[in-house]
Image (tube, rainbow, N blue to C red; front, side, top):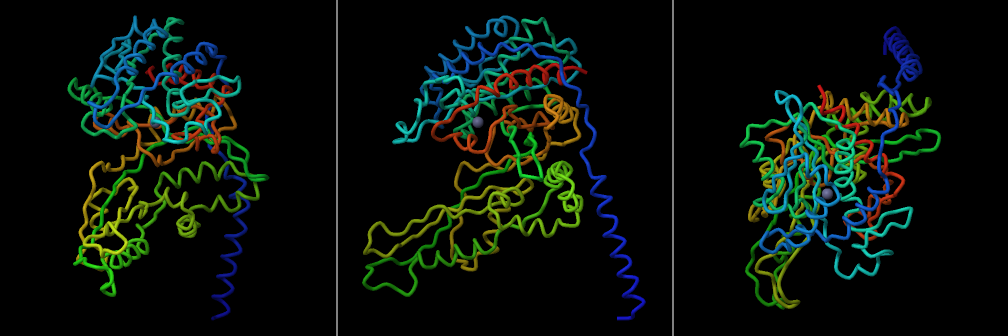
Length: 491
Ligand SMILES: [Zn+2]
């Protein structure tokens, strides 16, 4: 190489490297109003009692509404009426799809789009045989002073009762919103019941009335402690701005069958083994969406100085980061449609050749990809063209991305930060489904966030054994919703 060119290249590189420490020093969290709020009046004892009693009511929905035991839902509705008298006196209540409750709190300015607070009343059942693994019975609502135990403690009677507490307390204080405030309590979120979904029926109610919602808040994110020694010690409030879709696809190979004593070199299952390899070796393309870049940027700005030398160059590191993330399944799920071969079937007996072999492939689709894209992808990557590809019922396309520069997102950011200056508020992608996505026809600003501090180990008890919520996080939950309603229902 010409020494002149070599010299100038080295000079440029040295100059670039020299600017990194300066860039890292300047790479700091953006300024957000951090003024602490005045103390918010919360009746913590009432919240604890009501959450504990709400858990005792077994509100379990079935996919087929005919099979649902409606008595606990009726009991739950009466319970809400008794515990929240002001809400039932001042708000307009419409019961939809038998079990869903839609409350309207009339604001002072009907020209502004209303806001909605969502929760679901139903909980998942206890897996058979695990009942005795619970330290305190799953429908006891036991409050041991440190935790409130039971199904729904995290998903999501904690959230529902906090919303009711916040509105009841605001009514006691004589607060009137400017915008209309809707409380939408679905009854069958957990069963993905498409036809009778309470959320869809409630959304249709808004559609028919020509009501466009300014913003929706539902379950999804939470406040997670993030602690890496010497690098970061903060709380991460993840606001779910989108959720993934869900598709199960059956891939089948048909064959002659017959007695296994005269097996061909490859049975239908053998051919499927190749199909599985084709599918697994051709994963969906991963890419860091603007949302993920924003998430990394928000966290990157909050790490300590030496680590910021790396995080301040996140854009340059994008290709490397994407590659690394694909090797870590939880990280990969944030950046691409995931593929999981989950079930297989062959013949009904050990000595019978399968006439038909099938596998089930479960996909969690990334926003922007549809069920048709999944089928097209399978057709492309499976070399064996004699396979059948059948999409199973119950699929759901992913949601859109809600913006992070909306009035509502900015308010969420400000509230979380003002409640605790050690909080990083960042958008993220929700893996599971929520009722919120059904509101897309009437709302562009949909956020999934439960204002409770819960560590990862505890979060894993959701839908599992020993689901429980720390009592210490409850007060802030109600205070959050009071502040949220006061700020977001105004203007
Ligand atoms: Zn839920």
